[in-house]
Length: 458
Image 1 (tube, helix red, strand yellow):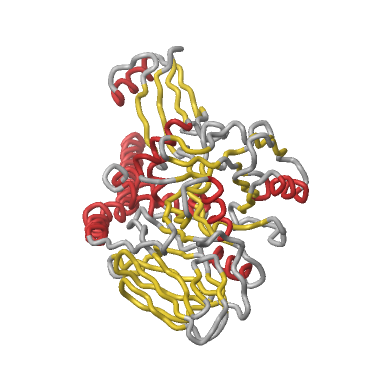
Image 2 (cartoon, helix red, strand yellow):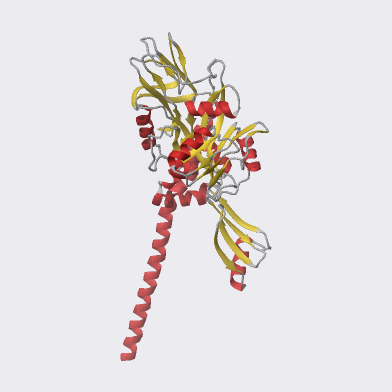
């Protein structure tokens, strides 16, 4: 009897273990299914619908013309090359990216090399019609552009001296990553990023886990929309920007922060190993090939050959990051001096052109005293009018000192100002019934007795 009871007890125990394993397995698959449900919804319904609506907008663009005497140029601000420790893209490939994406200029922002910002190391000037402007991303958010090629800045230099050296070297100083602590009273500061792609990605934190299914299911077909899942309106940056402009002139640019380093590669090496690395590039793991690992790797990747790249997944290809956000400027010519002057003044706007190309978005103020573009001042009078044109249907909001004062839908803007102030516009596209940020323009100042910033307006 004791033996029979033991057998029965053992069978019951195995049944309990089997049920636990079965329920755990089913629970795991339910969790995975729930995890992937939004990505499946994106694949079969949401992304195709958004893409269809974007295609309609893109097919009906009617860009406005720049004001007389000006040309519009599309640029990339804050980009890295192989000189940075976390990027391996050479300047030759960056040039090809600019050609493929139709960008006119790029402001580099490499990390310092051995603690030094040596402006002679980077490409400068026109290369096959594309303008390269040297620059570095330094400590405390310093992002100087256009410093003379014979100048070498030291990253450990005191902030006060570093800012003075940038100015004396012919450069202009912008702040990168305004979400981090910065000295906003610095006299040499001329502008800031009002948006940064990398910062937008970082603030997702645990929400990044929700992006993994989209990467696996949708990155191949909808890379632009997968990237857009991380987008958040840069509200805190805009609030800071508006506050700063009440007391001084700070222009705004879009920070692409191109690295092409958020990816994974797997290699079969010449030393009989499988190397797993990110695309910074940094080795994450290296496995010795033995009977088991060779069988598994062959089953996953096919024939193993020394030096063969077995797998690559890239979340942030340079082409995509260049197109995600664009800094548009109006200048007379595609030269370093002209582009930097427009960036310093803020003669332009930031557009999220991965959605719809915002080229031809124009707005200005005019009255009996003349006309002012973004970044410029105009003496206020009772006949001051804001006018504008959008290349496609959108919602345009005029903000005065950071607060909305007028809103309209369509492709044109005409509104009369009633008092002096600092005015800028935001434009949004309607996608799947929701308004999505598209354009942020630099402000126009209407001030009694104001004079224009130093400019070479015709």
